[in-house]
Image (cartoon, rainbow, N blue to C red; front, side):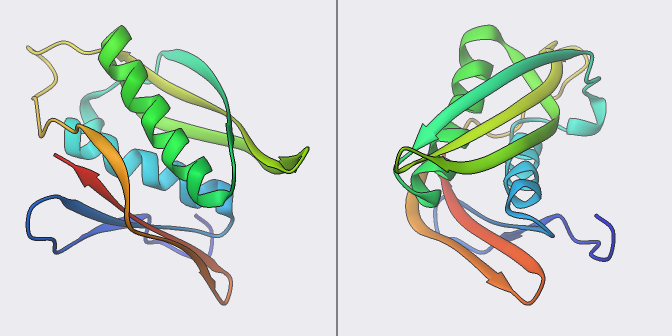
Length: 146
């Protein structure tokens, strides 16, 4: 991120995983949120982004869109066994009073001999979810149920 070097961090939580992700755009904050989530599942530095999955989702608002984005990525991991290390959100916009996200996830087939298994994530949640902007930085916060 030009001008801002922190992508995400993990916040204290009693039983689940609490993440804050940053971006100079909302698109970038969503990309960094996905990266933070997959870095919980496995060490993303070991994942080669050789395959691409196109993702198009809808949401009732930005919060629902964030939830659906993370949920779709987990669904892809669970059903295809692809682990992702790179994410690109091409656009987030409103369409017919809904929010839409057009993006991509890049990764490779999860291989337990190469990719160390981290925490199993059941689902993103709306608990403590926030989407805000501070000066020129977008901030998204959310909890992952483990």
